[in-house]
Image 1 (tube, rainbow, N blue to C red):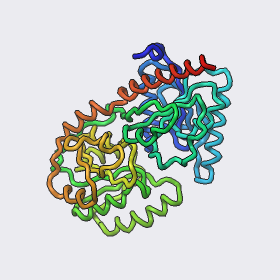
Image 2: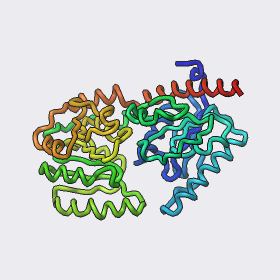
Image 3: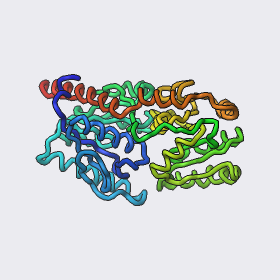
Length: 363
């Protein structure tokens, strides 16, 4: 480990300002932040997380206010969240760096007297074209996969990619053989780009039972999508399809451990997949479209299969699934641990602090 991370760092993590960060978080960014902060704290660093009230972290919590309860409150909540953090950072608090996991705090980094590392969680196309044109000199970026990194190669101060990780000890290998598992599972955020409707179509074509599980966020277009695309397909499937709304963590584990396969039918180029990692840790194969970073997360023939079309996916769901659950778990332990993610971020922090020192000397 490099000299800058041999000493214990003081790190401020900035969360997305709308949902609590805890072991029960459903959002991908919140799950990654919870696992990273916990692993970094375990390594002996001093961690503080700026997040909404009700968040539960391993280190200290800097609470920024109540979560927004309606979409029309989101903009005001974001502004309040950011202003409270900036005001606090300009008081007497001392940190070595800020790690922005919200994807937006960095835009105000010119008002912060610290280096700011921003983890980009979304596909490049999701960010407005002018987003990065005026990034402050103290802002640095990293991606969460190699495929995503290639799309952001034009960014200044780009420090590479760090794959996401999970707290592996929270996921146990299923003891139920695949041939005795009765249903397919789709698990995620219920919105158009995640493709829950495609999973229902694939299961229908294959004549398989399916469970759709996830949260419908309080956005009108998400709710309209559910009414337009999901409800009619659930009705068509009858007893062969079931919807689980906002499953708890315990329910999620049970769903993952008893599924024949997890379906990932996203219609966008995913930058990572926490749920694919969780499924592998439970010994459940992942059948997915070959898009974005999914080939980096899913090992073909070891933890699952990758497909180019709905037809190819549905055809392979009819026969017995030839994936060894133990191989899934072994692969997850080797590739997806939160401790490995934290170690990789320690190296990123070292590079960031080294570059920051060079810039300071050049002024």
